Length: 343
Image (cartoon, rainbow, N blue to C red; front, side):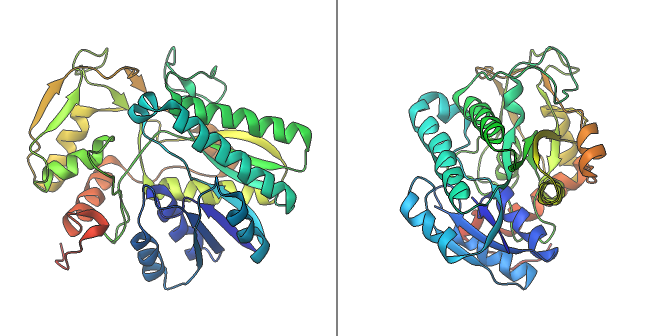
């Protein structure tokens, strides 16, 4: 009985594949490699010393995706696959709605056909929109202020309707806060295409000399230093959260949402300062205009995940910065180039 991991070559997906394999699960990966590289899966196999099947498949291609279900005995699905850049979603909303929502519907139709009714869904804290206060609990009202976030929210609603229609479904909705860091080996990490949308890969590319300076969007937020405050969670902690959610859905039915975050908010300048301290690399930065839709503060109350999943983040911001730098130093061009130098 295998776990199907959609988007398994991506940043969070690849780290979760490592944790699954190390915990004795059999996995099957599907990915269209639109924002990931096959090299990531080779390194997952190398790090775990285990082999697994992978398919180059787009979820919108129902015929080819069905072959994966037909050829394998799938027990559960962890669903990462989807477009994920907020700014890009504003520019091309139809592409995001079609890819993320239709792809999920195609996946769920096949799961239903093959009687696979256990699903861990990669959602996002963007479903909370602009929260009235922090920390954020799972019972906050849901809304979103960009197309990317709305796709996540709409999929959550689709999955709730699916469970309502058939209570044999068991679904965990994992609302991530801000994943950063990399595997401690320095062999897998975040490898964005083009200019990074997220803070940490931008910082690490400045640190390695790939970019001249960091652009910080806004310095007049209602925070302790004027820059936005977020809940940064180590990607390995996040990956382990998926295993805890998987254990829950395998042994129960129902649908529920869980915040995956540390419960601690750090500002952009806090992150820069800690990164400089940990790595001894200077990160020059400029302030620029606020980005549309960015909010002052966003961090989780992770109590529910701790109580009901037995999950708690164990790594601190220093660990996240150190592991991010190790990945970038060993892989200055991401998966396109490998440097054998040891740190």
